[in-house]
Image 1 (cartoon, rainbow over the protein chains, first blue to last red):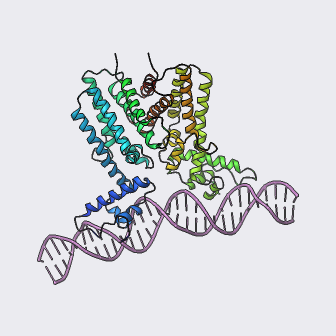
Image 2 (image 1 turned 120 degrees about the horizontal axis):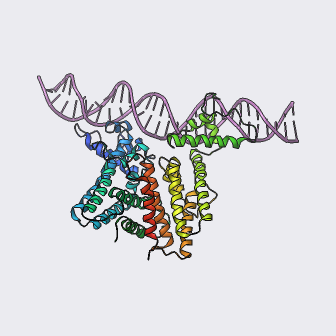
Image 3 (image 1 turned 30 degrees about the horizontal axis):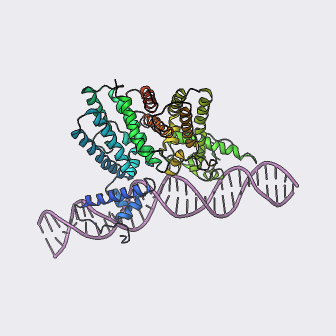
Length: 220
Length: 220
DNA sequence: GCCGTTAACTTACCATTGATAAGTTACCGA
DNA sequence: TCGGTAACTTATCAATGGTAAGTTAACGGC
């Protein structure tokens, strides 16, 4: 083995310890994907960083795509947890919606590289990008369902808000779609064009949230 | 040469006719990019369709990326023309803004594959995707400036609207950014997730436009 | 202690990719 | 007719994702 690899983790694993190698591969893949993007990260580079040969990766993943998918699920998890937290601590409908939007924005901007990889699908194959938009009816045991879960929670929040008396200007699911499209637009633009001289980054986030809430919630 | 290629265009060009070959290559590349995406389209497949050898393409383009860029400029051109048309025929500020949004939406949905390739940057290298968001200060003679031109026109329309007395809730450039982010969010979502059971496609377009205009234009 | 099973891993290899080097063909003007 | 050169080809490159087939070593059973 290559004693000079960046993060070589010692020699051969003992029997039954293969899963720790799997974790090491995921960690190395995540670092490299974030550093250089999906296409630029080769299985050989991942293998080098782990300290094994390239074909060894295929003992733990069927292909490069599945490594990416495993990482997708991991990162979606953080956002899903955060949303559950909001749902369990905030009950006022308007406040819930706003908090959801804020959490989504904050998550995207705090993890720009991961958002880019997972929600934006930049530089990743079509087959993976699609999974970020998986439909809720898809097999939930397969990786890549996280995006649909997040969206479903937004639909749920708006439907509950309507049920509890909040008046909406459009059907609840349409409101959810509009809300997501708008907030995603902000995050995507700020991340993809980080060096553009945006007039006012904070204002774009809060402004869009204001605009959307004002637009979907009826104000008599 | 391969007499069985899909769109072989006869033999060797006469002297001085190289530019027609260049057009043929662009046409074949466009078809293949739209059919199969950027990554899946290989130099060899493009060459096959044209009816020449693969290295012949390098007589007309320095690399695959530049073929894509040439196509980007072509397609951006259609939208830029349409916007110019609106600016020259519609004078009422509110109507101008709405028409711009409608044109943008219509363009994106009418050319989903091209929008995907050009504005969304799915399956294309980072280096190309960035060009869709080029800054207006960049060298205008280089390809890929179209995205910035479209955005600049939106900024212009809003600034002129404000100058002619329309009251905005945010600075004009912030309004332009919010407007673009929201409309792009709709187009991107409808295109990328064409098979999602969207509640109401038309309502998402007109609704977002209503929401944005209501949100950025002060209604006393 | 040693031995078979098999998890963990390696070396050698494959077809395909974008791209280059170097040579060949044929048109056109002088 | 002949030199220059635009237009094009063949042969080849290194790098890629992935596979086939063999090697090493840990563990349980005897």
